[in-house]
Image (tube, rainbow, N blue to C red; front, side, top):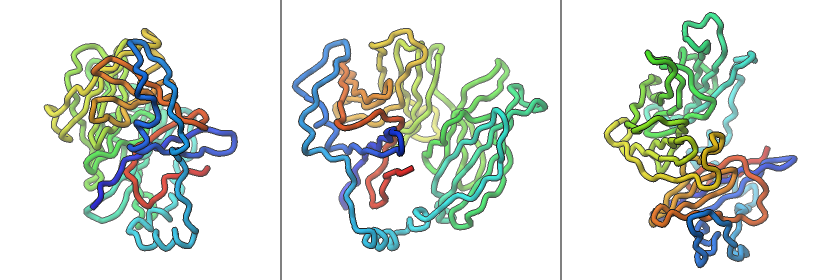
Length: 316
């Protein structure tokens, strides 16, 4: 069986819609001119001719697509529409979501966490939460109590090893803390994921997923960023510091930071985002490359997915 390729889906912004572009592993190295090597300061490279690079998805007749999808076990996923949550609107409230597969019931689950301000809350920072779960087969929401260990930040849950993981603001003995909390999709229980010893005061952290593992970006006052990966889920001792990337363009700025890496090449190069642009960092030489994607307007988000017959194309 051929190995499935990973692709980077970039959601770009425009006036009327948010089209998607995708960059696969074969196209990754052809986007930049490898003959030019920037020195210690980042330089924008001239891209190679992109006539052979296509970001458009192959177009098949609608009836063929329907026939293919109808024979796949993901048919219910494609046709699924979430029912109304019934949370309503409250000042200062927000909702976060997670999505994953429950192998015990052979069904997908969507987890919604509604976070809202409550002046009478027993939690010191005045926020409470309501959690609801919806399975594709039942297509209805059921309440499962409140989110454990605190209130999640306003980001989607990261799916790793049949769990959804959120960065959470939690109240401890020394004040508010940044922790990682996992939601077990099968048992619908919560557990704190223990973090490594980062070694010094971290200004900011971002939680993500890299090659199926939890990954944490630690921002040290915008001087550098350390990227930690949990190689064996749930085992604290398996955390390793994978790479350190310096901030060369804007040292000292606390408002700019890298994303969690999208991919790491065999030669150690790291693909990530900075200031809404793709950046390739080579830790062996301490150099940066800025791949240029032709005919692309500003983009607002990107995700890695495994190539399949299910199109990631988004039309809003």
